[in-house]
Length: 466
Ligand SMILES: [Zn+2]
Image (cartoon, rainbow, N blue to C red; front, side, top):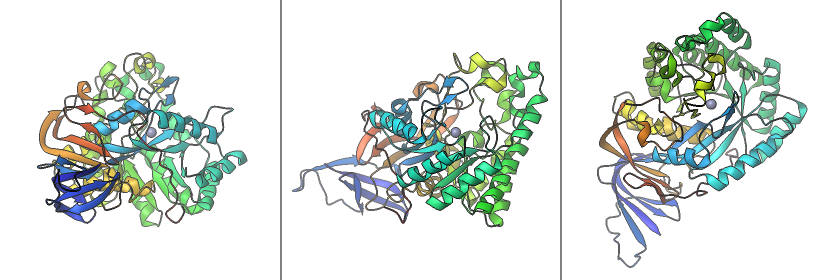
């Protein structure tokens, strides 16, 4: 059946216009004035969706999420079904899922194919993968080449933390990805600096969450990303910097770009509106905000917002990685280094950015769409199928009611875990409806109306490829 979204304010690549959108066969078939089309007309096969008063944007693309992710002996709560229900209720229609390095004995290809089976069976939103690497053996490099050819181009390395890769190994991976047309994502860090900082804390100090924010100083993140940029220039490959949290790291990215390094920079909603003050009280309240990098000083808010507005930052991703307070984070709170780090955020991402960004006069409506949908779709090689309202694009569309007001609350979210870090924060605007490839999957008042397995896996080839 064809659908007509009638009368919204449409944020299209061609501009912001009062327009109808005609959907046919799951794709956008027309943008313009379709008042002449009526239900019951000769071509009666038409459902009309009233979007009067709403803003219509392309479905959100969340470039960084974790589903059933193993970390420090725990597994993050959301599976493909609950994670993607949460995504679509928050206006996100495509997610990139970060997979951990496979357990020993399992190949990269096996791990990806297994994850694909879970996604195909359960996902409501469309999805693709980014694979984390823990080594640069000849076998791994050969597997990377084969997987890029198969449509899995994205690989992430850690330059710090427990799975830190040496500069030499990171360079081997960079050269391989450059040769075969893959993409490298980098988690900045520095094992020596991290060990130096961690060892300075006594066991007693590591048991107090009031110290949590000091376990990964901004200097370590900034050094890691700066070094990553030098390595990337040596290897001649672009890089993607995940979860940039500080003005200092952003300044290093700016320097590297000025010297010719091609860097795509991502930040997350929590670094834009939550600060290290959340750790001050310690205890269960501070546990809600344990992640890496940790929340920073509020002095970083303005530079990060400005960076999003002016292009120093390209993408806002959730880095959704939800662990419960009770039974997970609290089991490891006697040593903050053992806490499974990560925050839930897949559902509030778009509403927060709209409320704090657009309505807070920090981002234009067009820029809001760029950083939450268009730019991640371009990076993921899914544009213009995703991330755009244009004829021929998938009809992944979100209706935002700009006048609805509310509070973020765990009780209204679709995630599985037991809290939201945004509890009680006021919100201007709400998701009224989400469509994926022309099907309504979420509607305010009705809730989730899609079904398990409706989401599609999205292979990703270079634009010049297949
Ligand atoms: Zn992550």
